[in-house]
Image (cartoon, rainbow, N blue to C red; front, side, top):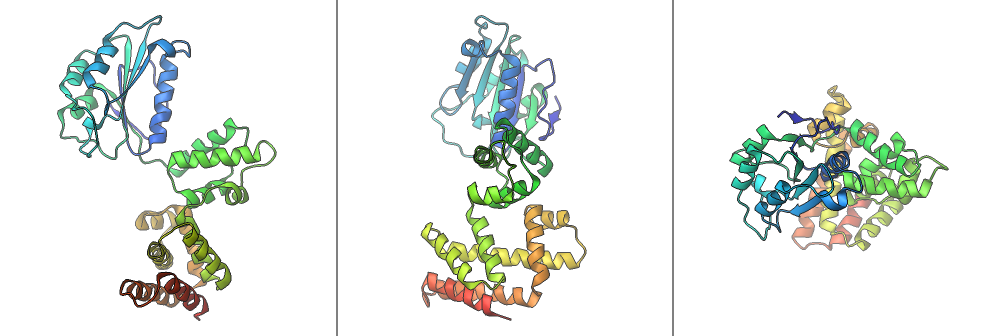
Length: 341
C-alpha cells in the first residue's frame, strides 16, 4: 500500500487490517493512533477489545495471538504494538528478542476482525529487513516526521480550541523560538497558555513570554539581542540567570558563538538575494529565527559580527587553557562586544 504524507492525518474507510505509524514526531503518531482506535471501537468497546503491548516487554507472538482471537462483545478488536524496535537498526534496550517471522506469517492472512497498529517512533526504518519490506507492501504506512509550519500551526490551534482559547500567529512564532518544533512540547505550552487566557483574551506573544517555558536557546537569543543593543546590565543579568539555572558556561559560550554565526550567515545570504525560506533551509533553522536574525543583521556590520566571533573563539581558548575563570571570561566577552564600535 502507498505511504501516506506526514501532514495527512485523515483516515480512509474502510479501515485497513494493519497500520504502521513511524517517524520522529511521536505526538503525531499518538494522535493518529487515537484516531484509528476511535474509528474502530466505541468507548464502551475499548474496555474489552483494545489491547496494547510494549514490544520491549512482550513477545510478538503473544500480541499476534491476541489479534487472532475473536472480539469480545463487538465486531472488531484493536491490537497496538508499541515500540516496534525490530523494524529499525537503532540500538533499543529490550527484555525480549523478537522473531519477526511471526509477523510475516500474520501479514500473509491478517485476522478479518482485527486492526493491528504498529508504532515505530524512530528516525528511520531498516529497509534492508524483510519484515519492513513486507509491511510496506501489506500495511497502510504513515511516516510522521517532517511537518510543515502551517500544519504545526493548525495542530496547535486545535489544542487551544479544546480549552476555548484562540491561538495567534505571533504566539506561534514566539513558541517556536522558545521551545522548538517538538509537537509534544509545543502542545504542552499551548495548553498552559490556553488555561491562562481562557476565553477572555487571545494567546499572543506576551502570553508566551509570561507563561511559557523558555529553552536555553531562547534565553541565549535574548542574551545576544541585549548584547547587540549594547545593554550590558541586562546582558549580565541574563547571563547570571542562566548560570543559576546550572547551565555550563562553556555551553553558553558555544551557543552564543552559534547565534553570532547565524546572524552573520543570514546577513550574507540576505545580501546575496536569498529568501527567508531558502536561508532557513540552508542554515537549518526555523524561518522565524531567520527573520529575527535578519533584524539584527541589518543593524550591525559584518565586521562587528566577525570581531564578535573572534572574541568568542579567544574566550573559549582562554577558558580551556585555564587562563581565566569561565564566568569571568563570559562577563568580559559581553563587555567587549557591547562596548565595541
